[in-house]
Image 1: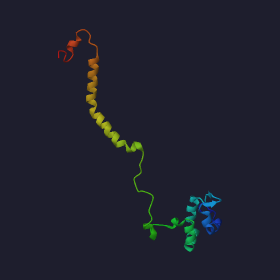
Image 2: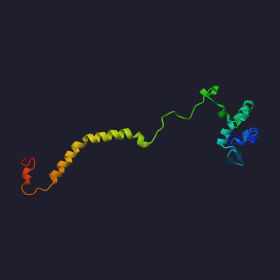
Image 3: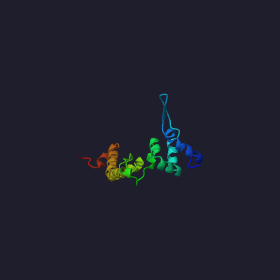
Image 4: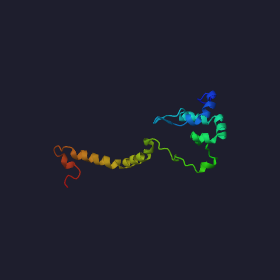
Length: 142
């Protein structure tokens, strides 16, 4: 067994490559290819396929498996456009926002002493005055 495909079946698959590797339309209804994309990729990695492709390039092109023969040193590789964009992975949201969150926390911590002072003053002002204690409050006569 060669990577999921029985080795004995490879020659028969290669002779019928065009009909087993592409979808077919029967009575107006499309049918899936007999070989899945995964199995086509596995088949393309076998030495039998490479030999077959060298001797029958038209059959390979008809089966739409010629892309498996493309490599970086192939002459058409420079003209072939890629659908993948080279970019940094997005990552987790908490990791992306970590720096902004740290900066916001540092800003809030810098404001904390003034905020605590204001809260303390509000609580002291909100206390009920008993007897003549209001005289001893700061700024009582202003």
